[in-house]
Image 1 (cartoon, rainbow, N blue to C red):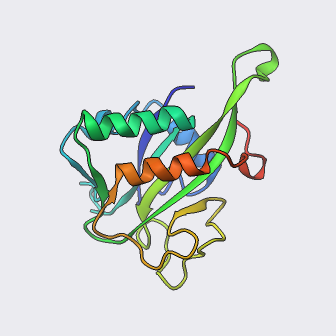
Image 2: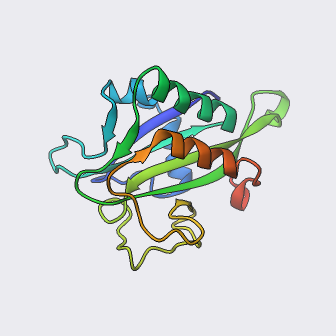
Image 3: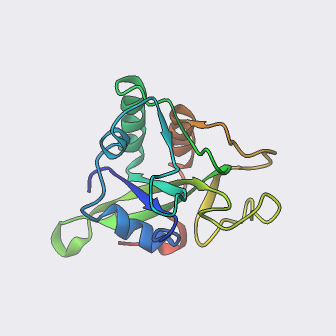
Length: 180
């Protein structure tokens, strides 16, 4: 399975659960890079131009090395520096899963990291006070805020920062037996 990037509009919140996120990322609407999903510019604003003018989640999935390389490429070559949201604060969640390969009986495969960068209240429905820091949310685990970090970015999260955090969770096993 190759890299996948997907924008989930908050009016649908189709990727609020891990299994649904993987389904979205495996759909025909997914793209192979942030640049190919977003089109250009040095910043990705998660406020879309939908009829409801809501914010959505930027989802990404891949093996750690592939995902990190893609984020380096989008930053260095495509000049995308950060992800931000003009109408809410952002949180970053992740989960790890095993996606079966195409070998005999589908036994081969790889562990993938799935990341969601989304507005705290408009997508997840939480406030800073109700955010379950350290406990996860709907089967997702926190990348930011993480382990005692006090504030949530609202001015933008650099792609380099997301890449570094993805590398840090690479040595953790797939959570909760998610297999696809």
